[in-house]
Image 1 (cartoon, rainbow, N blue to C red):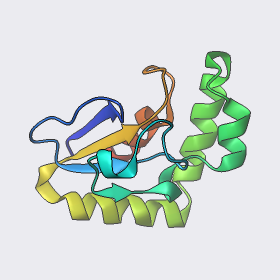
Image 2: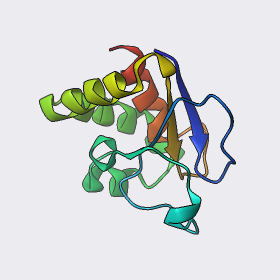
Image 3: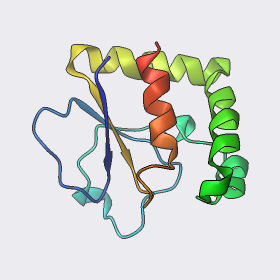
Image 4: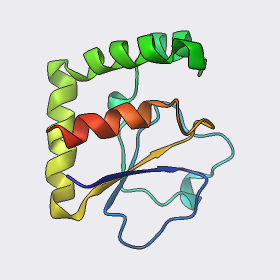
Length: 117
């Protein structure tokens, strides 16, 4: 499956497929009517406890990665992953996230989970 990742603050591009916001909280400074997205999948974002623990601290990345991957293996998460992939079909998926760090954010882990379906 073709999965790309973009920050919510970047302008949309052509042929991005299904645009899915994957943050549990609405991104700061973005008006809902200004964000071009098709789905808001809050339940695919890390749990509030895990998100708060991680706090976007790069030194916690490896442990966060493992914990979040385990969350994505839960039956309800697997069902949502499959449902979103089915909705995207052959058009691909663009995961939208609000974090500043492009190398340490949950969208990277989530994209990998979609690719492994």
